[in-house]
Image (cartoon, rainbow, N blue to C red):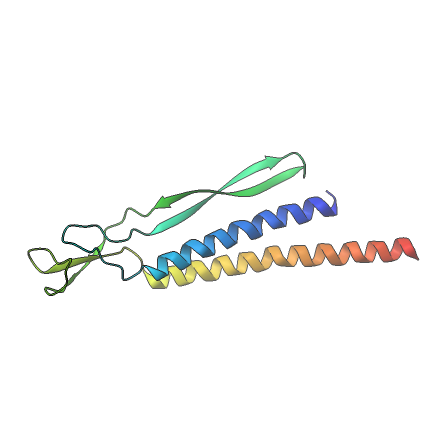
Length: 136
C-alpha cells in the first residue's frame, strides 16, 4: 500500500466520523423538542450507519456513510398539562434522545476522528522523511 492509499483510506474515516458527529449534534439539539399538537410525534433519534466497501484504486476497504436509521425505542412522557402538545391525560411525549448516550457517542466519534487524523499526520511525516532520504 502506498502513501496516497493510506491518506485516502484515512480521509474516508474522517468524513464518516464528521457525518456521525453532525447527526449526534442534531440529536442533542432536538433532545427537548416535543410535538406541537396533541398526538404529534416528537423528534425521533437518528443513528448513522456505515458501510465498508472495497475500493480498487486504493487496494483496500474504505468506509462510507450509509443511510440514517431511526431509533425505534419508546418516547419519554412527562406530565405537563399546560403544554400545547399535552394529551387528554396531560402527558407530553418527548424525544427518545438520552443526552448521556449522545455524549458518549460523541466522545467515541471524536476519538475515532483523532485516530484517523493521526494516520494522516504519520503518513505525511513518513512521506517527508522519504523525500529527505531521496534528496540526500
